[in-house]
Amino acid sequence: MAHKTITRIGTVAAAGGAVALALLAGAGSASANQFYGGTLTPGQQICVQQYAGYQVRVDGSATGQGAKFKLQRNGVTIVGSPGLVTAFAAELRSSYGNFPGPGYYVACVTNNGTANTNVRLQLRTDGEF
Image (cartoon, rainbow, N blue to C red; front, side, top):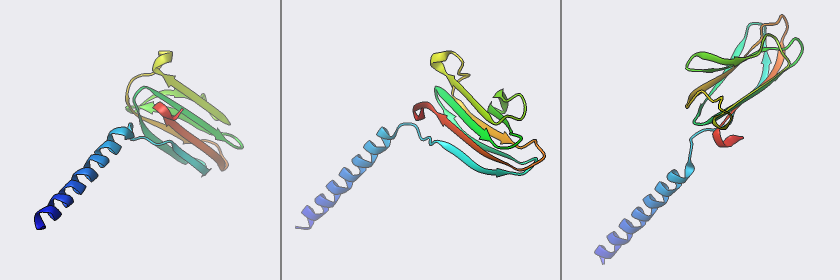
């Protein structure tokens, strides 16, 4: 009788482990849409980071005088706004031929103005757009 109980527990544990492995295998990329929304004071900067395997997109907006936006990979700015802007977007895709390669991408917004600005910054990668 005790042997059957142990067998059943072992079978349940093995089945539970198989389900957990199946869920992990089906999970895909461990990325999540990165977002910031809030008020930046003059001189303040906010950045979000996420891994991209084959494509990346950044969208941003700012009120008032605007803000400076940039997208970086490995500490190098790939694309940025020419100065203070109220809207910014950049999309880099393997299929467009403009994706620099897999890695961690950082999107930043900086208030270089003289007044507070409300900003929104969104970084999406791979299957998120």
